[in-house]
Length: 175
Image (cartoon, rainbow, N blue to C red; front, side, top):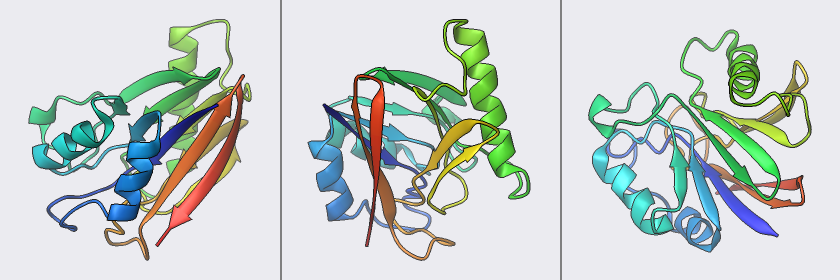
């Protein structure tokens, strides 16, 4: 059994000073961490790198400096589950469909053996600062909200995903 900490939208230093201690603890206990963008600074990225000993997957968000050189989309396979990570940048309207489309297109490009609607493929996005665990157009999507509670979030949130043999369990944590 492996644990994946899923966070996004830390917005340090523009909207928050640091990642809350309870989030930091869950990141350090995880086997891997996913950050779905909007670090806001090199210091925030360095903090995640330090907390995870470099064992993380990250994408860039709309507020991330280009100098961070983060990809727009990244994939990760853990315990038989493939995570397709993107920030989901764009208008609120159509967010879910946009992220589901990115997941489908990425899976089609990378492998013909899996389909985006397989239970073992999960899309991870950020951007909205609102937690979500939904199936959209046959694709399961996770959005952990904002790990620091950055506005417009009402509180700090994150997910811890437990994966084993292609099965997963998602737990939302909030303060």
